[in-house]
Amino acid sequence: MTQQIVRVNSLAEVSDRQPTYLALGSFDGVHLGHQAVLQQMIDQAQTAGVRSAVLTFFPHPKRVLSGDHGRYYINTLEDRVALLAGLGVDLVITHLFDERVRTTRAADFVDQLVSFLDIRQIWGGDFAFGYRREGDVAFLQREGAKRGFDVRTVESLLTFEGSLVSSSRVRQGINVGDFYDVNGCLGRRHALSGVVFKGDQRGRTIGFPTANLAVWEELLLPANGVYAATAWLGERRYVAATNVGVRPTVNGRERTVEAYLIDFDEEIYGQTMRLEFEWRIRPEQRFSGLDALRAQIEQDVDEVKRGLL
Image 1 (cartoon, rainbow, N blue to C red):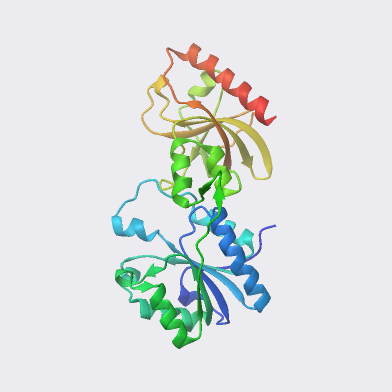
Image 2 (image 1 turned 30 degrees about the vertical axis):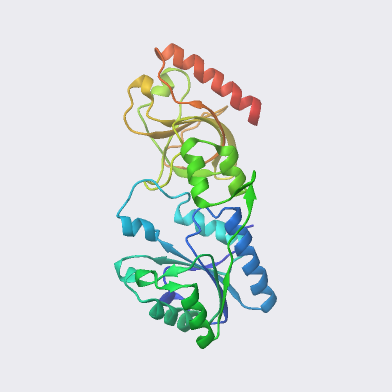
């Protein structure tokens, strides 16, 4: 069961100052490497009888500095918070990263940490925060010696299939549709969530009505193709043949995510659906017509049934 945690949107919103171990980082994906480091901090905080906390900036600082607003994130912010809660952390601070924060001097930011949190330990990897990234490890160690907190620099060396687990590796795996690697690095199935909306209903004309998913525009989408997936509507589980792409056979132009739920016939417009990706069946392709498309979808559905039912 997911732990009930305290979540705030800035340091100033933390209502109770108490001894705290804090992890700093983006934690996009909350992959196995993140989990290993955070679990160490949480365990030590529990042993010491202090609060465990995570401060994650949103939007990602790289996004703000580059001005890019395309698809980048592995998780929505809400999913990231839920995953952190599942690890057992007590407090999550989803701190807004904007121009004011970008130009905040590192010493001033440390003042805020000490003032609002009573920091006893700061955990993370290659620290570099504050104006012109002046808040590096050496800076924090000097500040800690003066202010009474320790700095724990922990770089995860966790590997999957012999290579280091990282957010960039997960993004690359999603980009090519390699969910064996993605799910192995995450320690769970990668998922997309969104509200089901009414599409052009072409699937109904060939016997495979699909649920179109409205996915956050900055969330990374898998490579175009057909996937075996598990679909969740609340607590109800279904298996689905899921297409990501532009539907070239019917001259589609925009990338969509649509799922054919097997053995399902309900009206679900406006409901939230969660798709967990299992494996890629094939790349997206153009067929000679709807009959050829229908025949291929039948094969795709059969593969999903064999693997998931």
